[in-house]
Length: 405
Ligand code: PMP
Image 1 (tube, rainbow, N blue to C red):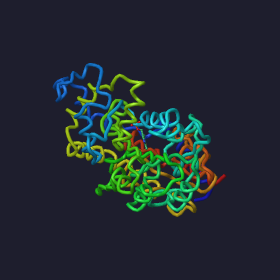
Image 2: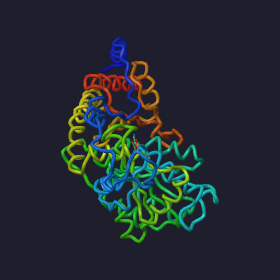
Image 3: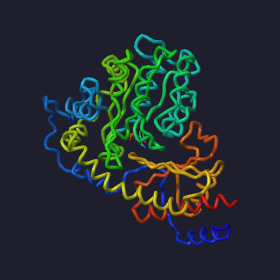
Image 4: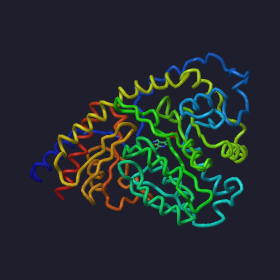
C-alpha cells in the first residue's frame, strides 16, 4: 500500500470519532460482574476460629484467608500473609522495610548507596515507578523467550554487592507474556550473589490468568530457594485484583518463616490488623482452588476473543511489515507490539489523534526510556469486542502512518 493510501485511510478512521482509553490492563465490567455475589450479604462475620472479623487484630490475616492463598500458591498457610487489597502496596512496603530497617541481622539497604535492582525489560511500569520514587538505581536486563538473560543476571549479581534485588513477573509477564522456564527459575534460586541480603521480588500476578487451553505451571520458587540453600531469597506476591474486584480484592505475600516473622515486626508499626471482613467475604465466595479455577475459566472465555481480535487485526494489517512483530501471550493481560526502531512514540501519538489512548511509549522500561523506542503495550481487556477490533485497526493504521513519515 502506498503512503497516500495510508494517509487517506488514517483520515477516514479519524472521522469515526473513537474515544477509548486502553492505557491500563483493567478487567471489563462483564468480568467484574462475575464476582457480584461479593456484594451480597455475608453468611457470617465470625471466622472459623471464632474471630469477630469486624474488630481489630489478626496481623497476618485470617487463618482461612491464609489457607486459601496457601492452597492457591502451593505453600503452607504459615508462610503466607494476607494483607490489604493491593499486592503492589505490599511490594512497596517490602522494599521500604529493607531500605529503612534491613533484612534480619543485616544493615539497612540505605546504609550503603547506591542500592540497585535488576529489571528485566520490557517490564511492569509500576515496579519501575517504585524504584524511581525511592531512588533505587535500575539496571536493565534483556528478556529472552524463556525469561531474563540468566548469563548476564548471574554475572551481575555475583560481582556487584549494590545489587540487592530483582523484579520478576515469572508467568505471563507484563507486557511480553513471557513465562520463565524451569531452568531460569532454578538458576535464579541458586545463583551466588555478592549481596548477602539479595532478594527476589517474585510477582506472581498472573498465576491463574490463562488465555489458552494450556494451564502453564512453573516451579515453586520458595521451594527452589529452600532446596538451593537460599531459603530467605524470594518474596512471592499475588492478589485477586483480576480474579474478583481490582482494588477491592485480597493481596498476599509468601516467603520463608523467617521472612514472615520479619514482615510482622516491620509492618506492625503501620497497622492494627487488615480488613478481615473483606477476607472472610472472599473466602466465602472463592472457597477453594477448584472454585477459583472455575471462575478464571469464565474470565478466560471473556478475554480470549479480545486477544484473538487484536491478533487477527494485526495479522491483517501488519503482516510482512519489516521489523514489526507482536507477542502471542498464553496468559496475562497484555500484548507487546514491536514497531521498527524509533517509531513507538510516534505511533502512540498518532493513535491518540484517532481517539485511542495507549500506555505511554517507553513506560515498560526503567525511567520511561525504551532505548530503541520500539515497544507498545496493548491492553485488550477493558473495551468491548467491537471496540477492541476497531482499536487494533486504528493502532495498526497509526503504525503504518508512522512508517510513511
Ligand atoms: N503486578 C503486575 C505484574 C501487574 O501487571 C499488576 C496490575 N497491572 C499488578 C502487580 C497490580 O496488582 P495489585 O492490584 O494486586 O496491586
